[in-house]
Image (cartoon, rainbow, N blue to C red; front, top):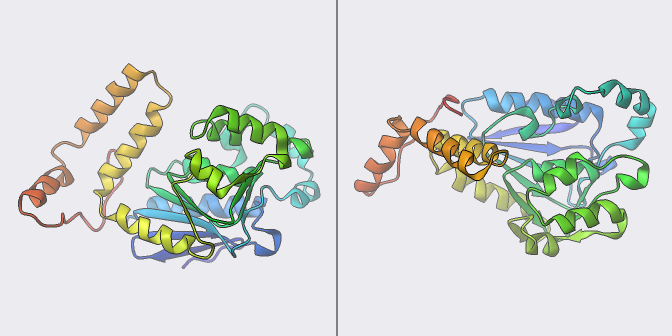
Length: 273
């Protein structure tokens, strides 16, 4: 376990568990937490012993209550915002796995409230599950902030009408756990207090898959979202061929023929991913 001020970084075998750890502030995203998360994702990506990550929040009341507005005011948020100018979305920090550029799979375990900036972790993770007390909503416009990154990311996963309603209606439009499941935003809804256990079970299933092929597949899916259909298929074909002849591509069929579990390399490099 490595020491961070606002998060818990806990390695459990090949699985990394990152816990947003500001329970007294409902795990609100502070500037320090953004910095801690950016460093944590870099460590995760560089650690060849880690193949999958879980991100969750401390306690069972709130996953992440959005940006820490008190901290924003205290450090002069207006001047900071103007200073971002045209440097793009990465100027806001690499606090999610997607922003940090890792292609290792990430499971988001939402336990309780997920508000505003907390939605970044939902749309930037790969598998999302939540507890039955989870609630999703966006308060940006109510506090004079532009809602952009979160609804853009969510619109890749959920119906546009839902995203627009969440953005424009603010606190009025609260998405329940069941509604989030019905709309396909989350994979599963589990009883309160069991979401981390279920995330660990899913992580174990992910670990059964070929690690390099997993990362290349994830990259193909995300890159394909930015392309037209034909170009996306061309890219997918290229990525598929790039893994042919690798140890994984030979071990998988051999294990199938011999009716045994495949033996993937314990330590893998990022390779084509």
